[in-house]
Length: 386
Image 1 (cartoon, rainbow, N blue to C red):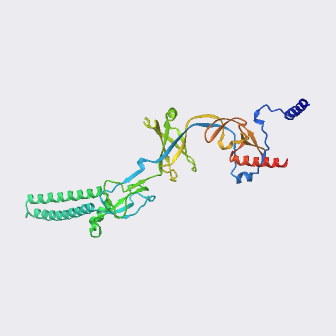
Image 2 (tube, rainbow, N blue to C red):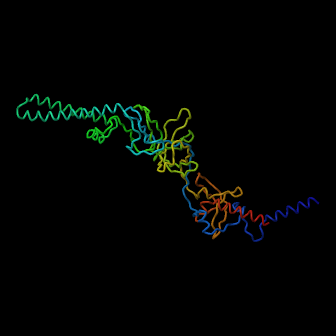
Image 3 (tube, rainbow, N blue to C red):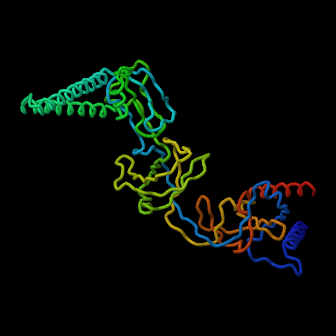
């Protein structure tokens, strides 16, 4: 009796799975899982940002994943050191502030600078006196009142005074004063504080360090400020020994970090020696950073394109998993049908389709997960109706 019952049940199961007469038999395993197609109006697609694309052959980048760190470009990092020692009287910039080239960062009171300015004024006075003496001696010499020897001595004294003034000018320029500031000092020294020294930004950048406080004595051999021009940064990638044969200058790189839009760059240098401690090399990417989004100290991931192959390529987000099966939503007239596909090679943003999608077909390239969610909702509602 039990054997007869099992035969009946098994026969019923086989009949349920067998195709009905006249029904096409699908040998392709891609159609084992059938799902109801979705009807979505164009307005709905636009509202949810669902983008369509036409399947076509393209190039797929084969990549190596590397990790690295963003650092300030050394040639755009400026250590601002006072040319003279002095006491801080005013601070104009704080950490995080932007400074233009030549803009004052702090004001110091410097005894050394006061002495150098005084020497300039003394040299100017001596030159004025020497010029007057030379003019007088020239007239006397022409009238035959003074000797040639006395005239030449006066002329020599004037030349020495002019040289001394030039030397005083150059010393002040070496201490950071501009020619315009020196000229103003000579024209109107009564209104100039001889000890006042402005510490200026050598180039445009952002203040990332400040070591100057009111009343502090700053030495002429230590940085008072550090500025960085972060409009361009370096990304230093760690290259392990196994990846060295595939990584070389000139290769495209896609830099990414959580919460940031990826940035494109190119490897321009790979260190020829390995670090003794880590046994790794460094690959450098110079990255334009106009929005200052990539900040020194950030850890990043990088996909280095080491080769390219051809195939039917779709965006990675076009493929969704339904019941453990990769699928792509394909448009059939006004419906979107989830179609099983077989995947090939891939990178983080692209995947190769080996079968299940044909060139020329229209598919959902962006936000396919929304259709998956809608499909799951519909199947759940249908299940409740049974």
